[in-house]
Image (tube, rainbow, N blue to C red; front, side, top):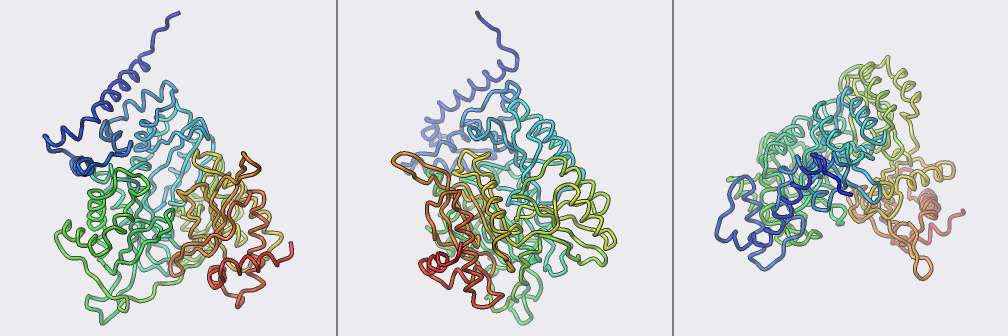
Length: 585
């Protein structure tokens, strides 16, 4: 028996047919491109594609999809498809990510929305509004991410566009939060309130955020791109894991440039590919950071690999060219020279407080404090979100500051209100105090909500913490990072102990979730990539392995204040294993 299509279904089919026609024509694009020079806002990227095709290479599917239909032109189809409840095809799932919407099947038959929260700061009313949207359209919870961001999951397909438009109504724009774009702009969590900071990163993160949103060339990149601004405050921003890291430094008297506070430029970080951003020797006035970041991205966009997604990040252009050639191309793009300064003229940066994101800390403003709230691997229920928003409105300055450590800060709390805030936080099932192992836990979404993950990282991370807390009396900070796949969203290579999800073989033809365990990663002045110590560890065995490593550290550290990072890096892997295996269970 025949059935008429609804108007929405007809709209979707028309759009799909149009997209299919464009996809068919893309195979002819290189030949026609030779006859017609690309023009318009996407000309730079189209020319970059054409050069690689002319060199005999084949564009990656994602490059073809972008050329067939720019994702910004797909919103009407996104909405039409969403209203039918249909699941997107791979090319549209890619395009929808330009609008912040990720279909995460088969892990969950639903969408995840990732937002843009520059410098990680939300107003209390925005936080509460996101909770309401998550109840209306999603799963009733959110996750704080390692990019000072929020994700909402379990958004049913037919509610996807409703959620996006609800965010826009409260001033949150997720455009470019995924796919081949510049991800959420991170900055110091205590920007503007930190007694020790050199620079308030908020205006620079905001300027960069709006530059991205309003500059079409900043989209249609060879792959994703990360930029971070670190003001040298108390809480690490992990800028050295970014493609561009702007690090606030103080240039001392006697330097060949005027003394004062500058940004030092580091580039090439991509922790999932075992590389951290390296110092270029370039310093710049803070007001120049936007145009310099713009030039760096344009150079990479023109020369980055658009044929092999595994080698499309900026790191690989730097590896092929070297820093000098790359920076020369940036200078040509800028039309002037970058300022280089020997590190001897730069004062040492203030030390991080590795527990500075948890508990009560005085602000630079007399009589005010910020309060760091610990979460279980970044998860918040919507009831907790609304309660936190009310605490911020009533007792703070109205800001909720997300951190790269998957928690948040409540700022502007008066001395006399600190106890009330602590009590209110505890009343909703959260806390302002944590063990050193809980405070340093970082975990990606894992197999619960990500199709790429090989293990349930958040659950396993909480199991490790629950196992360690009653057994190992940790008195120094230690970071344990769990990531589900080689994309390393949880940056396992910089963890004191880093676990990456794998399928562990059992028997002849079966596997179980597990991890390769690494040790000795670090960031900032202790920057290093962790080394693998235990491959193919079943998830159920991971807590005991972590316990043994921590007990070995406490028993054999050189002095009571030696960090786990230092301990792990002054021993070879086999020596560490021997020490750990000698510990009583």
